[in-house]
Image (cartoon, rainbow, N blue to C red; front, top):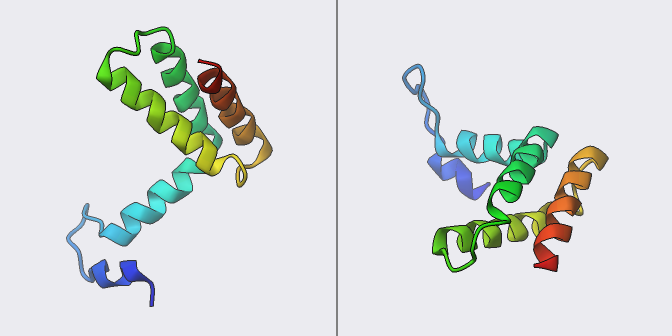
Length: 92
């Protein structure tokens, strides 16, 4: 039994989703090229900002952690974007 099965809800009203569906959707999204393209755009926007801004610092930490976690399992196009994030943020 998957731990998320505990949160599975039957007969949800139209437009509602349960936690396992949300987790699966996000998990699938993070493996796709559009997600990593959006993360590169975010990185480019914040990479020139001052690290003394706690929000900018936390975004950079999150991007770096995501990139390190997913680089090994991504398809080539998404992996290329992920590596771009790693190269930029690790050089700072």
